[in-house]
Image (cartoon, rainbow, N blue to C red; front, side, top):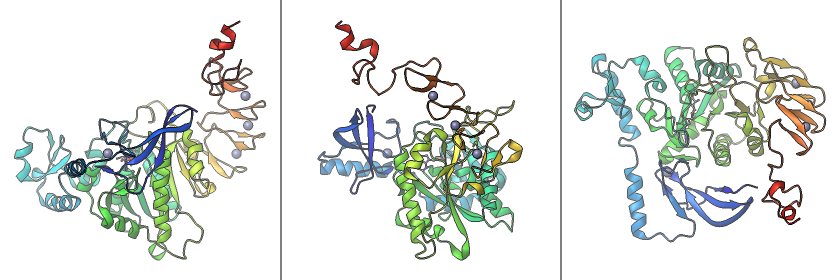
Length: 441
Ligand code: SAH
Ligand code: ZN
Ligand code: ZN
Ligand code: ZN
Ligand code: ZN
C-alpha cells in the first residue's frame, strides 16, 4: 500500500510522443487510485529523455497538436531504415581504408560525409567481422532508466543459443536481445548448415545500419509499437509464421527498471500474433518464450504468465559490474530465465555446478538443496536456503525468525517497518514509537 503511480496501460486514441502512443497512468495513495489520470512516455522513465506529459482530460488546442506532430517528426532518426540499408550496401563496396565509423554519431560514414564529421572521433578500417558484430562496435546505451543496454557475456549468449538449438527451434524472435541476434546472423552467414534465423525487435535504431528490414524492426516493447508501421508489423507476422515445421521461440531481455505489466501486455500481443499465423496448428499452445529478468520479479511475471516457471540458470553480462563473472570465480547474478517450455527440457550446464533434481524435474544450481518439508528446491538466489517451521517456508540463509514481526527477516532489521500498521493501535501511517495513543498516557 505505498504511494506511487499505477499503470493503466495502453488506451485507444492515446496521444503520441516520438516513442509511439503514450501510456495512461494514475497517481495512487495507500494503494488506492485517486487523482487525475495522465499520459506519459512509454519508453523513457527519465524525463530528460522524453518529457511527454498530458492530462487525460486535458483539452489540447489545434496549434499545440500541430506543434506536437512537428516535434515528433523532428525527433525521428535522420535516416530511414531503407536509407540505412542502401548506405550499408555502398559501405561494404568501399575498400577497407575508406570504411569509417563515427564514434560520436554512432554512424557508418560514406566518403562524401567525412567532411561533416571532420572534428568527430572515428574508427578506420571497419572489417566485415566488425560489421557482423555491431554490439561490439556501438557503445552500449547504459542510461539506467531508459535503455539499460546490458550485453550478454559470451558464455551466457552461447548457452542460450545452444539451448535453443537443442530444443529444436529454428526461428528466434529476439526482442531486445541484439547480441543473441548477432551471433545467430553471423553463424547463418558463415556456416552453410546452420539453419537458425532471427528477427531483432529493438528500440535502438542504430542497429538499422547493419540489418535489412527483414532482420530488424524498430520496436518499442512497452507499447507494442512498430515505428516502421504496418509493413514492419507484417515482417514480424511473417517471421512468426511457422513454415514447414520451423518452430519459433521468442527471447526477450527487457530493461529491468521496466514496467512489468506494460511488457507483459506487449508480449501477450506478440503471442497473439503468433497464434493468428496458423488457424488450427497451435491448438491451445502458447508461443514458447524465454523472458530474461531478475529473480525478484518472479511473482510479478507469474501473475501475468501463470504457465511460466523460473529457471536457476544465472545469466551473466559483459558491461554490468554487478552481474558479471569476476576474474576470481563467479559473482552471483540475480538474472534468470522465465519460460513456458517444460522445465525438465531446460538442461543447465553440469560443468557450472547445475544438477538435475529428480523430484522437481528440473535443473537447479549447486547450492539449491531440495527441502523435504516444502518438497521443492526452494533457493531463488543460488545460495542454500533454510526452512523456517514458523513461516512454513524456506527463507534466505541470512534471515532469522522475528517474533515481533511474526516472519523471517534480517537480524538487524527494524521491526514494525511494515505496511501492516501500528502495533499498539493497529492504525496505519505511524510506528509504535510514535503512536498518538501512547503519547497521551
Ligand atoms: N542482453 C541483451 C541486451 C539486453 S539490454 C543482449 O546482449 O542481446 C536491453 C535491450 O532492450 C537493449 O538492446 C535496448 O536497446 C532494448 N530496449 C530498451 N528499451 C526498449 C524499448 N522500449 N523497446 C524495445 N527495446 C528496448
Ligand atoms: Zn517518449
Ligand atoms: Zn528438488
Ligand atoms: Zn522449506
Ligand atoms: Zn520465519
